[in-house]
Amino acid sequence: MLDIAVIEEPAAAEASLDPIRSRILAALAEPGSAAMLAVRLALPRQKVNYHLKELERHGLVELAEERRKGNVTERVYRATAASYVISPSALAAVSPDPSRAPDQLSARWLLAVGARLVQEVGMLLTGAARARRRVSTFGIDAEVRFATAADRATFTDELARAVAVLVARHHDENTPGGRSHRLVVGLHQIPTAQENQIVQENRTVQEDPR
Image 1 (cartoon, rainbow, N blue to C red):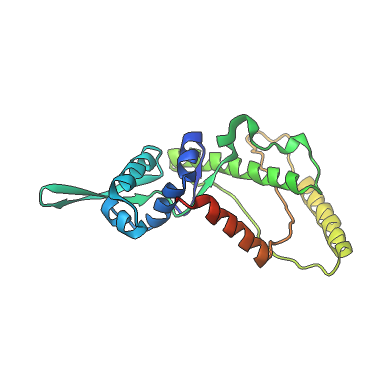
Image 2: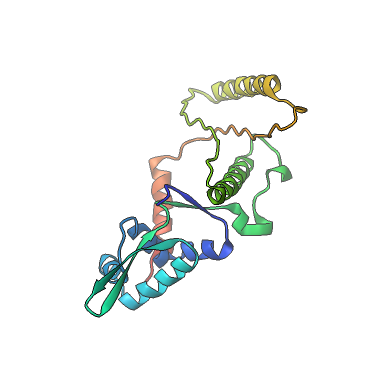
């Protein structure tokens, strides 16, 4: 099982967003059969079996083993990843494009940059998996608390200058065989506990299968 998988196909994305199927994917962090999942999720076995076949068809679950019980063969499935991210490429022509409005102070522009990051790294992961190679990446995740908005502005100015100097020092336009890399630096507020609760409540309402 992968730690995380990127969903690039629109049909697979649609399958993963179905409320029942997303519950099945979460439950299959531990392998199980349709009968076992029916008990875990309190759903009819026939319904679980139907959704399992759809998830398998899109590569979101896979057969882990087959167990013989008398005259019956029990198929045990597992999720192909512990978690999933839907690539903006699944949205085709309406996927976010940072070049449309390159405003560094816009939250929506930052979101578009993040979406592009998911799309490009997802493509690299897909290609590397087929070639049985690793993807070379680097990331920094840090938290900083500012006393005032002025302090935040000063920080962003200093960070922008530092990054510009570093990029200019190492950027090589002409060496044969060189490969371009994308550097993304983002700064955003961390959602509060209340904001997280609102998101979870909205998600619960949307995923209620009743």
